[in-house]
Amino acid sequence: MKWMPYAAALLSVSPIVGHSAVYLTTEQAQQLMFPNSSMKKVTVHLTADQIKSLKKSSGIYYAFKADQVYKSSDGGWMVIDQVLGKHEMITYAVALTAKGVVKQVEILQYNESYGGQVRDASWRQQFIGKTSASKLVLNQDIKNISGATLSSKHITDGVKRILQFYQLVLQSLG
Image (cartoon, rainbow, N blue to C red; front, side, top):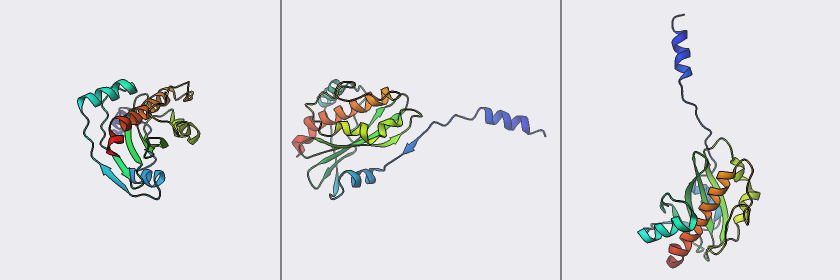
């Protein structure tokens, strides 16, 4: 069989596909976080000073896109953002009340092969009730997850960034 060595060679150079899972779509997250409300997408343009402030206050130095911001008919907000896990991006959503208090955090897409424990409701519930005045420091007011340290830290920083975004921008859009 002349083709067998070639087939084996092709298979040996095929890329290793990482673990990737989409848990919720944007629409599913909206229904879960604001079940009795209608949602409207809001266009937000950040100034250079606002971008700089968000980077400084959250510790996340890549740009916040602010392209998935939704206002609920009850006055609350849902913001979808991404943070880096260990190697791959984590897409998550934060629901805020009209007063900027964290109502819920959901993981929409997780691409890492390890650290998926950040999806556990018991870990995500630590954010409920937090505001832009909250510290949000891993191993202090937010517990770390062994085996998911980078994902835990980066999601914590991401929630902090969204809370600062509320204070800087969304609060004035009321």
